Image (cartoon, rainbow, N blue to C red; front, side, top):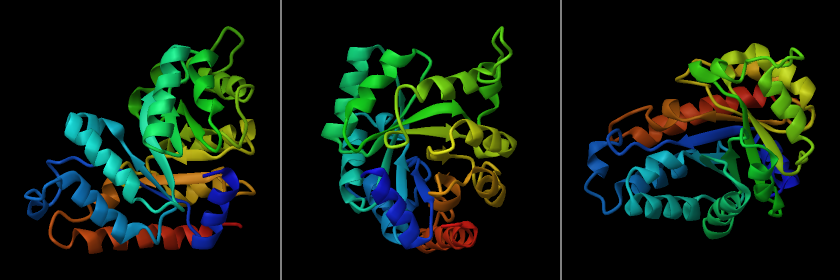
Length: 269
């Protein structure tokens, strides 16, 4: 999916909701655990319940890797099941020396057909550029995350007084463009989003931290939205675990619709 197609889907649905598929087999409803592939069956029903309200899905790869080869099969079936008009994100947080990054890119872009992948930038340009060589694919670079430990490195200052995450944003825009590069910006530090938008006025932001982590959708949207929307706001636990019973699909749909309806009011396109 390219940038224009993503923007068109946002406009069509009046939504910039990304549903995080952080599927923990210990948390899925008990009645699904006898299925031949419980993780995929849960994801399938979550997608069925939410796809009319979402523009993107973000499986957290760690939850699938933890299940070994069976987990990879569940992940592939999930990606194959997501409607092709929706944007897919491999939340894999890869990033290594150039030839290794090329192999990671081939795995997620060619073999699994994801539209994008999260990448850690701290090994520098040669660890990121291989991902940027694939047509109509996106790198989503970790710059200012929502976890408490983000301050350990991201908020440190150089000798010139610049914050590290700001240097990452400035430098990485020499590697990619708004057509293939996005940034992860955590919702729990909404005060930073306006500053980051000034540094990257045209790029999309993937914003985790709405819902269970306490991020404020209205504030994030006010501070981070640009002329093309420029936001993919992720919600995982508050949607997929809205209920642990047999009504989990209906509960997920209600939560996704609630967020979409709020987004529709906030969207300036």
